Image (tube, rainbow, N blue to C red; front, side, top):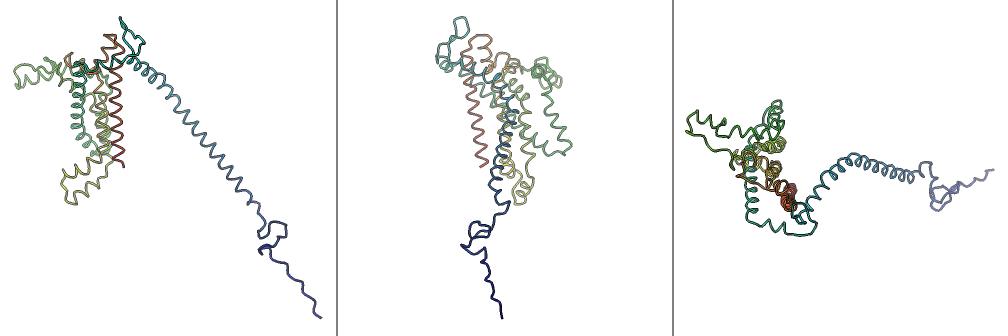
Length: 331
């Protein structure tokens, strides 16, 4: 006689069927690790937040001293001096804290307009000459064998190892009527009597060019050294001449370095007062000399501050224009 079969228990995977352990119907029992993901994500976010806070703390610790130093010893004094531009000069010098815009209206006087114009012309000519001389020099250095590049760059920056005032006085020895240049030209027979080269605008331009030419060469060298030579080779292979390759390939790719070098030369040339004082002999007055005289000789701090603020505003606009041009070329 056959025994009756016991019906099989329903599978736990059947939809709607309760699981043997009393868990939700239609679901397998949760493993030990299944409850962890929520906690793990919370822990991960907390760890990430701690890491971010740590990075910000490290950045603050590294940048803090420099920012405090700049704020205390540069920004605050600069703001105080520039604020004098809106005050009035006292009868015997000093600053009277009465708000006025008279200092800025004086900038429209013909003598000050002429000084500002001369300063812009001299700085522009110096920058143009620095670009004309610096580009070939930077290109030649970039194409040297690697072991000779370092030597060439050291020679470029070598003048910076000497005091700026000493370097300027050296030009007096060179350009004076009894200087090296006049004696050499007289000895060769090119001239009969010494030339008046010193205490002139060309002497000022020569001094500024000598002082700031390395600041043009270095960014140009950096831009040229990063050039991919295969681009110029491809241009030549496609039938372009060397001149066309330079104008359409090399120059556009190195233009950011050229713009940076122009800023590095133009800005200090515009505000320099040592070179015009020593090599110009009082005949060439630039805005830097004018600002220095207002603070130290005329004791007219408000007008000197107005001149400085005007110069600073012009330079800020120039830097913003250079930055905008660089970003536009990058896009």
